[in-house]
Amino acid sequence: MRHGRRGDPGARDRPPHHRQRHPRPGHRGPPERLLRRRQGRRHGARALAHLLRRRGLSSAEASYLQLAAKVDAFFGRVRERYPDALHCEKGCSSCCNQHLSVITTEFRRIAQAVLALPPAGRAALSVRLDAGRADPRCPLLDDAGACRVYAARPMICRSHGLPIALPAAVAASGSAPTEPPGRDVCPLNFTAGPPLEAVDADCVLDLSHFDRVLGLIDRLGGGDGGRVDLIDGLRALLEPAQG
Image (tube, rainbow, N blue to C red; front, side):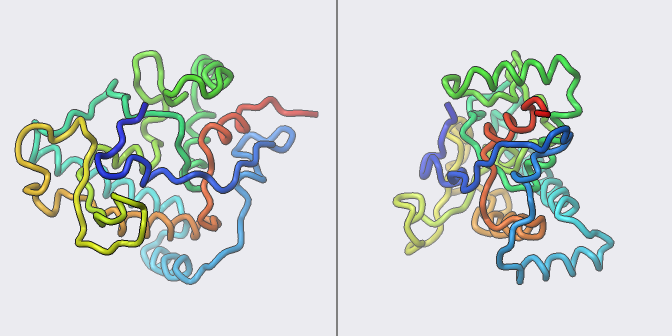
């Protein structure tokens, strides 16, 4: 099972709002109804789209890739400064469970990576999906515990393991923040070395800001704040075409 963060095990993985599962006949990409453009509030998305166009970028995916690169660089800084505190490495999959949901742009990237897998990899994934939810591990893991689509992994996977800043009241009860921000981290990390409170501020991820940016990217890509359940989405993606 996923090792929850000490303060709030489920704060970063909210239940999906949309679980549509049926691809169009012969469709080779993500299911149309699963990924179709949704109407929602677009004021933040329009502002972000304008900024991206000025920089020569015009898509949610381009913005998402920029965010992913920043998170990867952030992770690298933490690892360099606290080399003995992070235990995240290939095969460390105790945090990789199947109860994940992702934004539309993330699922498109995951779907592209899955469809690019060799036939044996897709077949193994199908077997894992057919096993249902009895196995808590993410079906995208291979037999060695490594992610088959590592380069396309979603933000929750990219950022998990980092120290995060979050309001203490939210960590305790899920309510609106009423106290100064607290800190949290995967229980496998920072078990030795400096206490979490002493970690440099530029090595602590601001979760509220991070989630706001991801929400803007979701709306830019046509989302309305709903999320795609990873298992349902993968099943629909690999479901044999009817017709």
